[in-house]
Length: 188
Image (cartoon, rainbow, N blue to C red; front, side, top):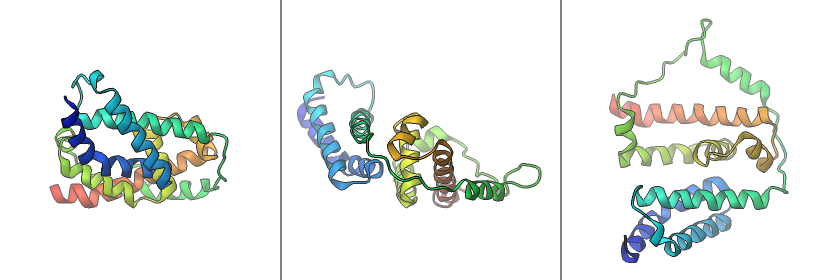
């Protein structure tokens, strides 16, 4: 890949990179800084790009590291915790019947790999993530997209482990509902 191709990719991917960074950092200026740092790192390290992964995958990996660096910088600024363990228990109980089966079955996903390769799936996924409340979306992104450990997420957000799992559960349930309505319903 040459610098011209990289510049074209950066221009095309920048809005997605910014959305991802804003979702995680919850601060437009910090997100912009992280994206700029990631793009600069990509330009500076273009010679190391071997093409084994897609350019988007490579750029998001760089951005992920920049976001984690920002979280480390913020680690000394705790955020107040929310106590909703009881709400989680009630919400979980509402999802299952007396025999521990889903009340509303999860839609079949015939070919997950094919879906993941479709641009439309990622547009729907981005919309679903964007529709989640801030804290659950942030915890989901930190855990599932950035691969952070629960302990680090709790430190960053100033929440207890149980609250972290509450937020993660809410995000997953929200994504499940959104994808069921906006992706699986389309396919069915």
